[in-house]
Image 1 (cartoon, rainbow over the protein chains, first blue to last red):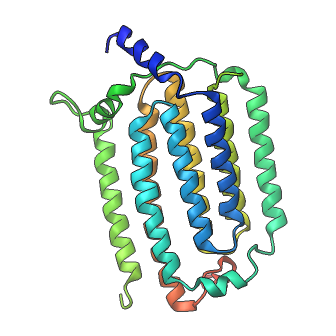
Image 2: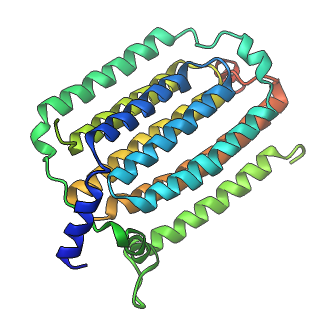
Image 3: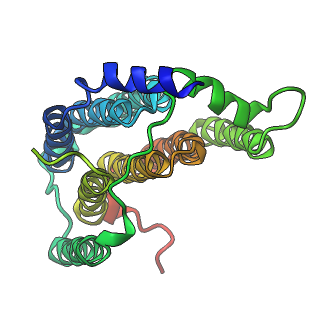
Length: 187
Length: 102
């Protein structure tokens, strides 16, 4: 793509990717993430998780990753969450929502998570120079085409990730077989 | 206003990751534990896409698609195990899954 068109696209896209939208989407993602792990009813958790996934899809759009944002909405919010909601319907949530929600070792778990957060904060404060401020503008209009070129190959050649892509399809086949066999009543 | 840099996205991803870890370590309901694992995988995806933007190539985005495939496979198998378990013991609490404990 020629640089003039690229910069024109960036200039026209610039008003959308404002800090305001970033903070809105990030806040929405984190607040609904907190709701996911604190709600008593599993259905409410699933609905909060859908909000998180959609906000993360918005963050992908702000990073000019339009194909990944589409995959996020279709596969996560559309596929995996429907699977979760079906399983919540199949298992008995009324009994488990009356139970204790957190296990007995929760202080230890919380302490371990706080230690992990301290580790992240230290890494980000001390290693700030490792993450440069530059944001190389990706050509957003051909994003899907470039990803397809890397996955399927282009111009008769195998792409860089074609083999891994085929292995991923094999993994999905194994997962389907495993899920079907495990949910059978008599194996 | 400060322009949004890669570090901002990394902080959001780290927050989502820690929330997922808290969910995995403290909740008793297996369905919510699996949802927390999805949160963790999403945080990793966000990191990969942010780094893909920082370096200006698409390898991170392609890898995030593979992570999504893994998440789908893991959710399908995990929920299958959950249904098989619920059929046997009529419970979905993590600390009652102790059939292999001696």
